[in-house]
Length: 125
Image (cartoon, rainbow, N blue to C red; front, side, top):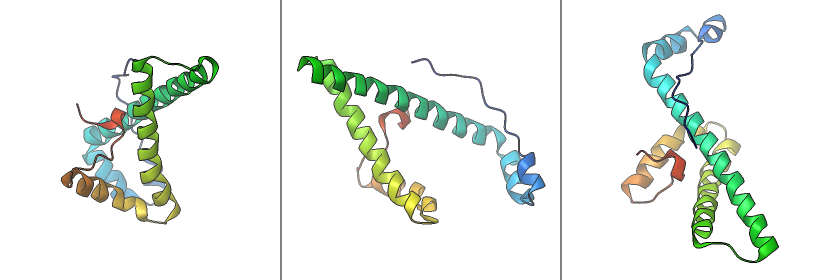
């Protein structure tokens, strides 16, 4: 899948109008880093969606034909693991208010312990 290289434009006027001037200044100060991080996230989500769609096609093929190739099996296993990683991190933190602030710390701690919590499309290359 081809990644979009064009950077998004950040419009921070909505924050300035809603009394969040400090946040708007912080975003403006780190505009390039913020834009790049947002682009990386959106591209990763787009690729995950495409991979999940492909995995569902493989599942339907397996149901219909009762067989899939080794490459399709590997792709399916990887994608199912990625979906579980996203659900395992995302769901509890969306339910508990304010817990989303802990996600970066948990990802860093897991990385130090050798636990891979990043979906394959979000790993640094």
